[in-house]
Image (cartoon, rainbow, N blue to C red):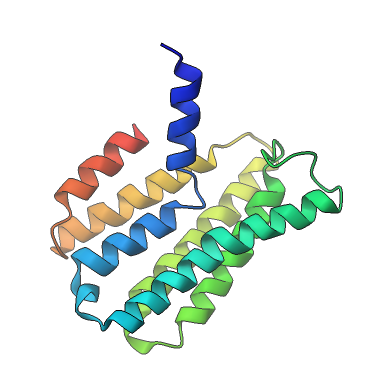
Length: 164
C-alpha cells in the first residue's frame, strides 16, 4: 500500500485551512445555532469560508507571484501562519457584528491565538500546524461535551481519531 498517498490525502482533508469550516458546519447543524434562520447560517458559513480558506489561498497566490514563496506547499510555514492569524482576527471582527454569536467570535479569536503561538514557536522549533488545529478542534468538542451543548460524542470521537 502506498502510505504517501494516504498521508497526503489525510493532510488535505484535515488541512488547517478547512478545519474551521468543518467546525462551523458542525456548530450550525448540531447545536443551538441550528435554530438560526437560514440566511444567518449562510452568512456565518460564508464569512468563515472566506476568511479561513479563500483569502489565505489568494494571499499565498499573491506571495507566490511576488516571489516571496517558492511553491504553494510553503515549506517555510511562517508566511502561512501570519496570513492565517490575520485572517482569523478579521473573521472574528466581521462576525462580531452579530451579538448572539459571541461563541463563534471567541472560537475565531482562539484560532488566531493558536496560529500566532505556532508562529512564535516556529521561530525556534518546527511545529505541526495540522496537529495544533486538530488539538484545538478536540478541545472545543471536549468543552462542548462537558457543557452538554448538542450531541458531540460522535464528532469528538472522529476528531480524536483524526488527531491520533
